[in-house]
Length: 408
Length: 105
Ligand SMILES: Cc1cc2nc3c(=O)[nH]c(=O)nc-3n(C[C@H](O)[C@H](O)[C@H](O)COP(=O)(O)OP(=O)(O)OC[C@H]3O[C@@H](n4cnc5c(N)ncnc54)[C@H](O)[C@@H]3O)c2cc1C
Ligand code: FES
Image 1 (tube, each protein chain N blue to C red):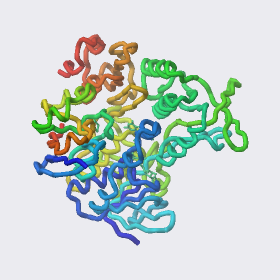
Image 2 (image 1 turned 60 degrees about the horizontal axis):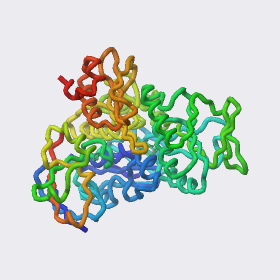
Image 3 (image 1 turned 90 degrees about the vertical axis):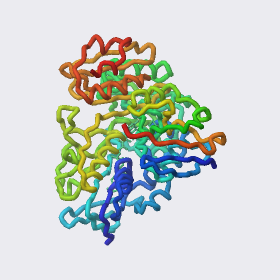
Image 4 (image 1 turned 90 degrees about the horizontal axis):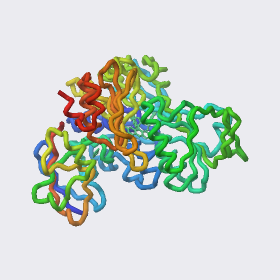
């Protein structure tokens, strides 16, 4: 049995930040981080961007070099998976029966890419984008692929489509909803990205249901739609969302719903166990207190800091405005706030100029801003959302008026 | 390798060395200086890697690019010497560069 003051489960963005911030805050106890990927903690967003494109090497992906963890006495156990937790005894056990006795446990286990829930979903040649290993495999197969079908028009699917089109592949995006990004953004944003992708040569079909995948010798060869259409594919990428890793901690007795439920200090319902990042579900004040998971780096890092503040004895809840970015082609999208329950949008600027923003209102209040190649609006938008201001709509739409001048 | 001098938020001066081609941010992080959150991982989207370039080095380091300037514009701690550490690449010409970590916004 290994005894440690802090046991971090999951060596991703959130887990790594807990360890880093603890040491930065002068914490001297022992820290063990167990992660089931073979890699040291790395930056995930480039996986569908520069890393997929081959513009970033593995070295540059790492959040810190190996020496950093050694020097700071952070014990990284990579390639190990925690399989069960005895919350009362404060013991976590790995797949291979290794036991860790902990003081505090931080469940920072993220999630995994939702597999295609349709016949043929297990053929070879079907890929998802969540880990470095998965992307390496994808990159290897992309080399010999000509026709690529991306199932799911969310951010990750669109980013991958952008990279692969640039590499000369024939890319088709299939989206079940009536527009891409339907779950995350307003219609003008969807329309803009659809037209950009089409202009780059991507084929997009929206409102289509994929019924199954056809294979040949165990390898995918086409995607079949409910209307009978068959789209040939050398390779398929499924970008249909994330399933949070919560089964193990739920089995240990933690209250879970759409994720591991935590309070504003990221405490779970179990003693001395915290949860952060993509797997943690919290009442978010920017969504009228709705329980939700925020899948973004700033959220994982901010929650990590909240946990550290508790451990260091000066509790500070994480209540920053959620934000996120997505890079496709030469387009930089930044979003601030959560558009949860919005009832109105205001378009600011002309999408045809490839630089504009969409402002989301809920009962007149600015709740979110999506800014495309418009960093100024993103920065000011974050502050508008933070203050929850009700602003004159005509002024919001008027590009001659700087958003920041509306901050009052 | 190129020399990089960093003044941390505690006012401590640290002498680091970084390989040509890496960013000032990467060199600072690899040295275990955790003052910069660098939330976006260096893709010029967040402004959490704000530093001041020492007066003597301003022209050698060059001006902020357009996106960078927009990100920095609203910082309470903006100065003419402001840059984002992820956007300054270490070059032979910058051997000896001195930067000061800006206060947190
Ligand atoms: C392709 C892609 C692009 C993205 N782009 C952006 C972006 O542009 N901007 C942005 O803000 N966010 C982006 N995100 C989201 C962002 O990467 C995540 O929000 C962030 O990584 C969450 O951090 P985390 O620590 O919660 O989870 P993760 O980083 O996923 O880390 C969890 C780790 O725990 C491990 N683990 C799980 N179960 C166990 C177990 N039982 N035992 C041991 N280890 C375990 C997992 O294997 C994983 O390594 C992107 C994500 C992906 C996949
Ligand atoms: S790290 Fe985000 S702008 Fe430099």
